[in-house]
Image 1 (cartoon, helix red, strand yellow):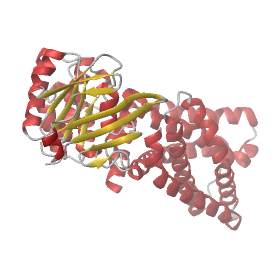
Image 2 (tube, rainbow over the protein chains, first blue to last red):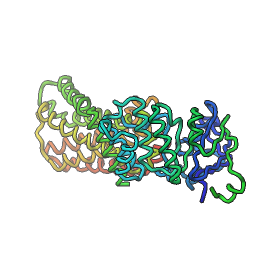
Image 3 (tube, rainbow over the protein chains, first blue to last red):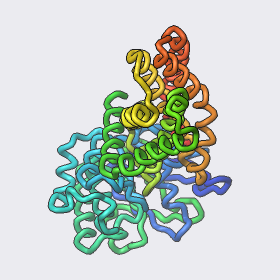
Image 4 (cartoon, rainbow over the protein chains, first blue to last red):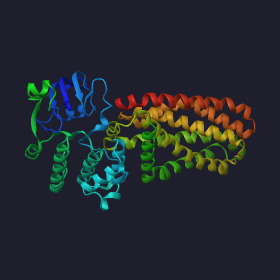
Length: 225
Length: 222
């Protein structure tokens, strides 16, 4: 089985600043990778670049088999990004937001309903405009939007932020299920205890570089998980 | 592409229907402009009837700018434009969907304003085929060009003020052609109007084609 993410000396610039300064990283399918590091280490840029929202300007970058140096768009239907923003349309209801996200991602409308039920959004919140939700509720809808897309690669940037205790437990269960189902998860978090309990592997970022990003040579050389 | 276009158009129209910005702000603004033109120019209805087609399209253009800006403001809130990029939707489909949603709003606005100019400016409607074709071609052209320039300005902090500066010069020939075609139709001299209608159709075709090709890359860089 091919690696879900394979980066070699990958560079991404924010203006002239190298936010990623030559990252080497392998992530095998079904793994939950925790990316830890101080603020400004490049965690968010790494996730955004893997999603194709930031460009890799040098090195090699393959995500889900797509060469992101050549094509940042083709793989997007297969990934879900939970970032600092919730990506919601304030004037649409929770149900409308999730239906749009699911259909845009190539999933059917039923998956939006399942995601709503899973996140506890199928009650009175279903027909409430996203703009009227609390921050925690918006975060829950954002998680549901990722779930509704049924992605092969989950890119999660501080995913526990804004969720209450029940929401965090629910979220952790969803991530474990996705990984058990073969999805790959990359997770950046400062809540190390909770995130470490989810992770099957941990790497540390500093100064735009990843320490210990490569899998053991025998595994990476044969591209076997 | 068509599936994505329908999805995006449905989403944009649903956002507008729920926010009611069009009904509560754009339409009243457009009617207000018509009334103010009437005050400013002349109380003589014959004068107003003569300049009516031009004033109609100037009003559509200014009011349409609000609809175009609105179409991209909803993508700026909470980084929804990133979500649009991440969605995996086809760039041409997104362009066609957004342009179609703007065109539907412009068409509704034109219908309301048509009633306005008939009542306020005492215009007698003639040449329905040419009027209809003019409206369709102009609406498609405005929506397509507005969507192209909307995405160019979308990622900039000064987008609200930049968009009119980009769009108005480009749309000046459309304004001229639409006004002349309508004048010819209303005067009962359609032969003078068809060249202008053809110009509108060419403009619309160019911008629809350009948008289909260029919107995806422009969205990536916005």
